Image (cartoon, rainbow, N blue to C red; front, side):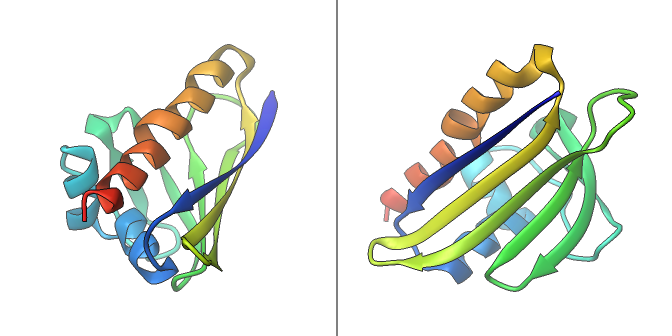
Length: 127
């Protein structure tokens, strides 16, 4: 199992980035796909037609999101923590993703850069 930590600068305030990550209608705008999402701890979520799915663990409005991501029947949960900080250019998003299966690490790392945060950055840059 591997872990990663990355930072992204998004050209929007933290509350807008938080909404882009937690509101299913906003998620659909930057992914182009329907999403199931709730800010209720314990609720299930799904994005990109189920290619990302898991359980929501914790939310602090406009500041923090913690989710468990499902990877088959692995023994330890894969946990994603996103912490949003105000930044002079909008938001600094700190990403921590733990317990990534070794065989999925490169795809997951690239997915964060290109599909997930890359899409969010592109979405806000369009305005």
